[in-house]
Length: 64
Image (cartoon, rainbow, N blue to C red; front, side):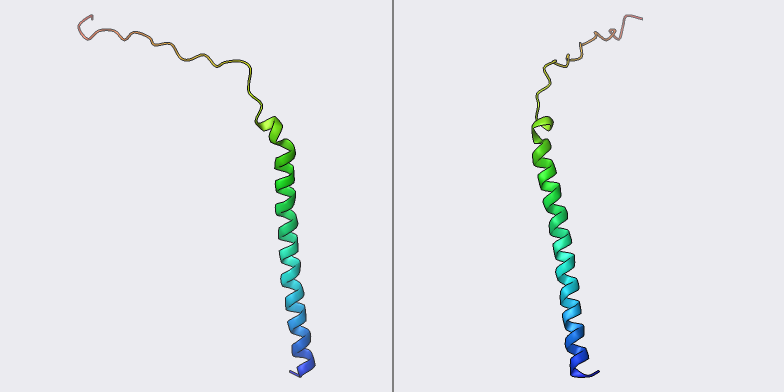
């Protein structure tokens, strides 16, 4: 390979790495922004209390 082809290959590789980094950065940024926009809905307190299960008495061992 000539020196020009080697240099061109290095630039192509560097551009590819930068492109992958930028795409990943954009995806992470979109995920964070989406989460921030929906955070209020996710943190709303449900006004209805969920009733606790009532304890049912178990039959005594000698009652049969």
